[in-house]
Image (cartoon, rainbow, N blue to C red; front, top):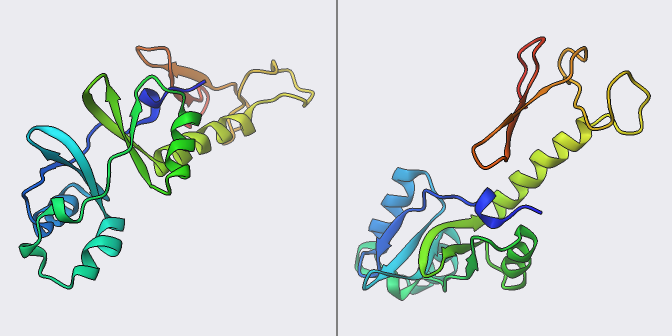
Length: 176
C-alpha cells in the first residue's frame, strides 16, 4: 500500500503569517502553486489556498495588501509521511479540504493534495490497464505490453527506494 511520502508534493511554498494576502498570492503565482503553508514563529500554523481567497478573503472586502495572511488562513490538517494514502484521502475528504500538511515528527516535509492522490491513482490505473491478466498472449500475466507498438514487454525503471518510476519500451522507446 502506498505511503503518503511516496506521492506527496515536496516543494511547498511557505510564507510568514504577517505577510499580506497580496504577498501570498504573488508567491503562489510565481511558483505556480495553488496554496502556501503559513508559518508563525517558525512553525506551520495554517495554509492559504485559492479556496481561502474565495471563502475567507473576498468576503472581507479589503485590499489584498492590507490583510495579513494569518487573518484569512485555513487550519492545516496534519498527516504523517508514513501514513497510508487511503487514510490521508479519508482525512482530507472528511474535513472538506483540498490538502493536508505532511509531517515527519514535528517537521513539515510537504503536503498531500487531492490532485496528488488522483494523479497517483490515475498512473496506477494506466499501469493496471496495460497488464495482460486474463488475455491469452505469449506474455506473463504481470508483464506490460507497450501500448504504442504492442510488440514488446515494457521494462520497469525503479527508483532508489524500489518504487516504480516509469515503464520503458525497449522496442520503440515509449514511456509511461
